[in-house]
Length: 200
Image (spheres, rainbow, N blue to C red):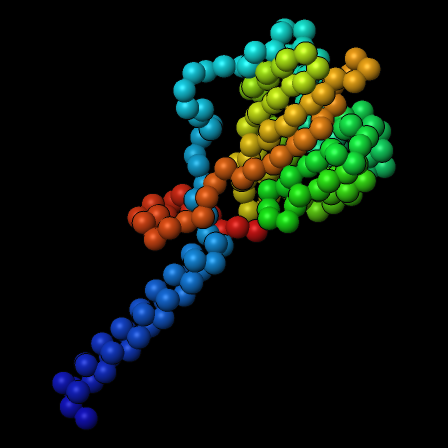
């Protein structure tokens, strides 16, 4: 075969390999395994506010948020009963929504089981309690705060929101929701590869 005959065949093979690579990458992106991480601290749009809770209510709710973080820091499953009793309303109506689809937990027992699994298998949760937005009216309060979950592969940003009610003079969660702050990648994000991360 002449040299001229080898060159078109080589280009054909390069084209096939490139096409396979693009197909693989496109499938990977469409499967949602590559996400785009936000950089820096989450910025709220609009007015800057810590919420409308009175100073007294804010201090009381900050105690609850610090206790929540403390539980997720120590991850001591032997103390989960005390953690749940201190921080969650004992009710069939209490709810916790996890970051992934299917993680909608209803009832005190379901939430306890979910948190036990978090402490055993999930990454290290770090919520920024001092940056919490806390609003309250009478015996109901709403909170929102940024944070991250630290994995061996690196951190992922999250937002924690929740509703608390005051019963017998003590604030307790009636609803907690964890939410990822990064998003699935699109083809345009290939221009900014430094922002891409592979989901766990």
